[in-house]
Length: 248
Image (cartoon, rainbow, N blue to C red; front, side):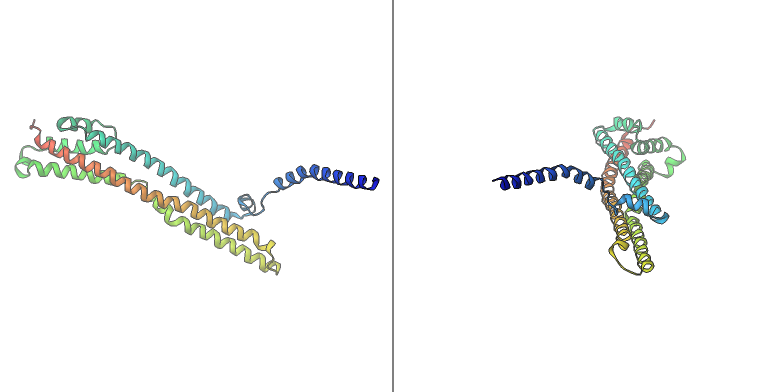
C-alpha cells in the first residue's frame, strides 16, 4: 500500500513538473525567430540583395500609388460625364465649360465654343462651320485620350519587369549558395538553406509585385475606355448644340 501511494505521488509530481515547464518551453519556442525569413534576408543579405529588395518595394509602392490616383480620377470623370449627359443645348455648353475636371470635358467644350466664335470672315467662306467645329472638338478629344494614359505606363512597366527583377534576386541567391558549397566543400543543408531561402523569397516578392500591376493595368485600361466613351458622347452633343446655336 505504501509503495502504491509513493508511485502515485511520484506520477502526480512528475505531471505537475511537466505542466510547470510547458510555459517556459512555449516562451522559448516563440522567442526563437525564423533564421530564413525576410528579417534574415535583410540582415544577412549583401548590398545587391538589399538593393533588389528596395527596388521591388519602390515598384510596388509606385503601382499602388498610381493605381489609386487613377482609380479616383476615373471615378470622378465617369460621375461628371453622367451628370453632363443630363444637360442639353446651351446648358450643356455652360456646364461643361465651367466644369473643374483638369482639362477633360471642359477642354472639349472650350475648344468647340472657341472654334464656333472664330468661324467668321474669310475662314467662314473657306471652311463650313460643321467641319471647323468638328476638327477642334476632335483635337480636344485626342488630347483628353492622351491625358487618360498618364501613369498607366508606370504600372505596365512594373508588371512586365518585376518578375525579372525578382529572378535576378533568385539567381544571386543561388550564386551565394554555390559559393558556400564551394568554400565549405560540402553541400549540407545548413550551408545552402539561407541563400536558397533568399532566392525563393525574391521570386515570391517579384511575383507579388507583378501580379497586382498586371491586373490593375487591365482594369484601369477598361475604365479608361468608359471615360473616353463618355467624353465622345458629350463632345458629339456639344458639336450638335454649337451648330444649332445662333451665331453671335
